[in-house]
Length: 589
Image (spheres, helix red, strand yellow):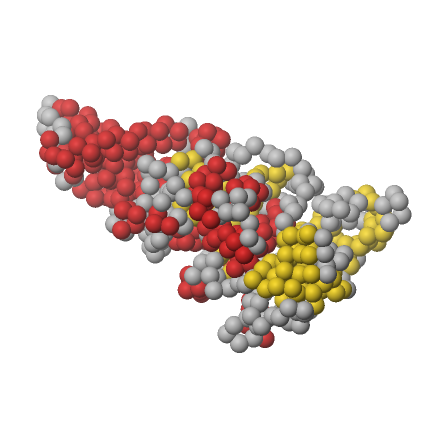
């Protein structure tokens, strides 16, 4: 029930100052004016309050009433989330489109979850069972890929006094009842609400040990991230941040993907909304939308809702993590979120820090990234949240505050390079500036699948890339001809590695996704080219003889010519490489 808690005193863009405020708490959800614009209390001083409004305040006048139900900004969690496109405060955009023109009407209120749709519920509890928060009350098949586990709310415990029979129910229906030791009774529905700014409770953190497989070779092999890890992707305009995150959303082996378009251009989100329903998951052969939730808060939407969209996304992710799923969040981009913080902070007349950002920017970034991790759920299962946050530094300057503060709180960085992007080398992830601190933690997984070779293969190719960087400085000054062939083979191997391995075509049906097994085989054959090449050069061969080999072209074409399910063909190319090198060696014996 909404009550009048005060009146509008002053309007400063999306920030509303209220007077005569009673019975209000920090972060309470409020509705402002006759349009009932949704907002949140962010500052209290006696009977005055500051409210950030998540909608356009044009036409709002001083003296109008402010209403509140005394609850914080929350999201609805239950069956029907997957496959839905929401705005920053969890309003379903497709339903809004059906009731609005091309723009979202002011004060429009649409339920986040469909109240009419009925779901086939299968109970997991029985009368007399002792339950605690986080236990599974029953299951609903939300999509072909995802079994939705209806959870007992974290605050509920006691004995089960009633359980619904198997059958079809709407999300508002009660499916179980409990009673605790004090005699208090609770009802469990198919859905629940949770405040977005408060993390959902879990059991203990679990050490990270499993990689998040993305199908992108430069990521999986050189700069991997663990499930439950955090990544920052900084890059200037046009370097491929959004494209990289789209690839991860499409092909990563997370059970569920939450894609947050935070302040991005409308045409980019339109591309996502048109393209994703057509895509098929390479592992399950099912539509990708059956495991995807989208939050679209574009740059022309109210700036305050942009700030809330990050929390909406992470709370939805935590709900599926609590069900025992591995969730990946694509936050595109955290720079636009930080800019929203800066604008709101300025309108509230707070003291600015670096480049006008509020002094609490590092704290907010830390709070967001700390909600990632691998956890034991309250029921004892394992679930994880991996966060990939892009940053758009002005002019590609990585020394700006958002990039620098983000690097403090993440353990992996995929730095996008302008020169690579201009050369149409995608993903444009710099192998010299990027890093991952998860290599040691996930090496056991890779070692098991590579016969114990992965760590050594990765170390050797990284060493060659470092050597190539030094040799390129000489080449730029005097040209490659002055280098001995024992050094030119390093340059040639790295060129082969960049073109045949690191560069990946997202429009090619074979190359758009690469399995770990194929990545290992490709890396083995490229390094064998280097090892064999060094041997024959020492016997008297030259670099031009190696480049003229037919097998050289075969290695270049592996990524397009060999499908993920026929990697035995790479062994044949490797055998052919050995025979070709032996023929050259025989010429000098």
